Image (cartoon, rainbow, N blue to C red; front, side, top):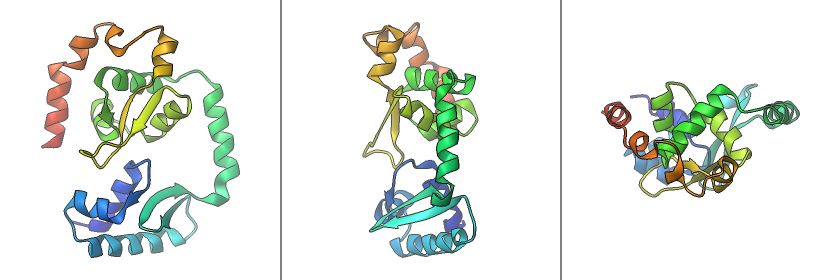
Length: 179
């Protein structure tokens, strides 16, 4: 078990800063081991990299290199001027029918990394992210703006919502992924 690799993965999938204590508790690892892993990651990202590890107090997060801000902003502006992509529509559909749902659960269903897609959907105001004390990762759900855009007054008005929200194949897939 490479704790540094595990901590790096947890930070990568988290869209918000995490405290060292929250990481330690969720992984059931001593806080000192988490600190050692973070020091190792800081050394790794000191070299020229598009990713940096930022620490503010006891909070840590992986962020893009500040020197690349201009290019990241250009990319983001271009991304949001376009219509929703097939991948964004698929992710939005999973959030709508299976939410509230974690990013890891979405990725288990779709089979691909969804971090950038979720950020795009949040920036567009179609998906909300919130913290849940039962999960280390944030939870995602369809926003009121998305419902309004679809002309719906509530999530239950989505076509076949009940059958898809409680679909046994999806529930079993999520449970099997947890094993």
